[in-house]
Image (cartoon, rainbow, N blue to C red; front, side, top):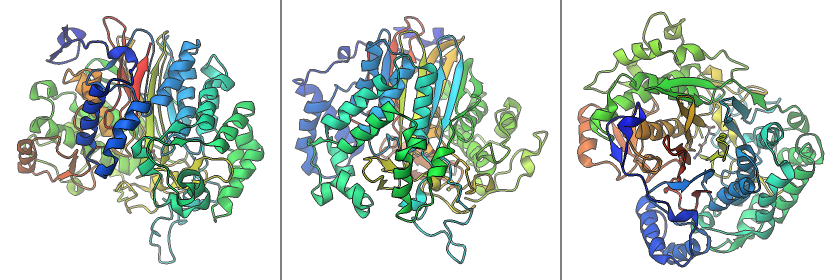
Length: 618
Ligand code: DON
């Protein structure tokens, strides 16, 4: 037994050291395991037609590692991602002597092939790196608005937002940054070079991979069918791919080979011309010049602390790091551990912290190159103390009536209130290498399959990240988020994100690598996993599996994963004045790693909400 009291800062719970996770390898004959995984998948996902059920077992037999309620264990290196083949790509390059950056880039390119819903080269992301010596780097390769973007580009003549214009099709596309970001990371900190780390992705694109049933189902996406190139590539012109069928992407393989040979082609060469032409033919505004002027930004990491742990996370244009630190600052003085995970009391206090941080997000956050974001004030512990004072331990606050604490916070309380929204498909992966270098990456097309536009002849989807702006201040976006003028559409601006790639250390030693997709729920999912470990003494797999709840200020509700909280708890929350919304079966995909402080083992927590990924290492 490991006593987590002894690990400093962790409260109150002991857990048994998990047994090795089937040595990271799955023997495809183990159908007893598959049956239980199948049941778990059915139970958690509660999805779609039972006609797929038999096929699910078949597909799992073909392509999956064994699922576990315990973390994956490895002595030296670990990768966690939403797709087992992308995890394998990262592990493969580390076995060849590559480091965590090589593995992250290999996993990132592989996800662009095996997880086209979100893995991407046509989108953007954030990469947080912590080298073994403690040096931190943050790469912002977020998409930016094309130079021709204007504040009213999604409005009709009456000034109303035109439905779908910022979410589907050519006008929704921002300038992609993913290739530039991954290439820069590889060049600056990788060891193996681009050709070697892209190789697994090229192989997967060329040779294909068996489609899990969820993917075969997802590929029938209505919007993909609206764009001929997407319909051809992902829907075989209407002869839909079936679960277990091998999905090959020869055009994408060729595109990746071109990038490996000359990454500049994407931004300055013939490929840039091809991308711009593919967007403009449908009335989009992205130009080759937009691609040529795209820049990856190295930004200063957000640093906070929580119960003796140091947190490092994403700065603006993500709201993630600031909101995470603010939430935890507010909660730090509450003894959540003794209230207990998922107790109504702990959920109430946590919800109140979420509410306040999301209100600040709406009012203050946007691209720091265009708006002054008061980061230092928002992550100041005194500010959190003042916010905490406004929490009634017995009763829910009303979001619309919530007043920011008055006082010496450089005028934060005087800022005009925004009334605005955010987008649905993103992916996160985490890597730790044998030397202790760690990489936490969240990358996105925004919505599932992004804009649903595939670049002609190039085989990859383009993002719909423009919807992460407030299409109009005060009008909710795809995620129901309200956002302020700081996040209005503007030429060359980066839309505000919620992506929260995070690294946690204790006494300067690597402890956690965290992150998830999920739009605004990313922030609360990361907080939930972190509190699961630090406050509630869960191991990383338990923390990832733990039920999730969310509040984002507006709409004024506590969203909870369906059927994962007891009716008694929900009743208690309602008695406290909360409107509880049991919305989706599940959300997010936390792909996380914990380092055992005693042994240095790498413990991988893969999110069982997605049955086709895995944590693996050596
Ligand atoms: O950057 C953001 O915050 C969004 N584009 C993330 C979207 C997302 O996580 C969708 N995931 N399921």
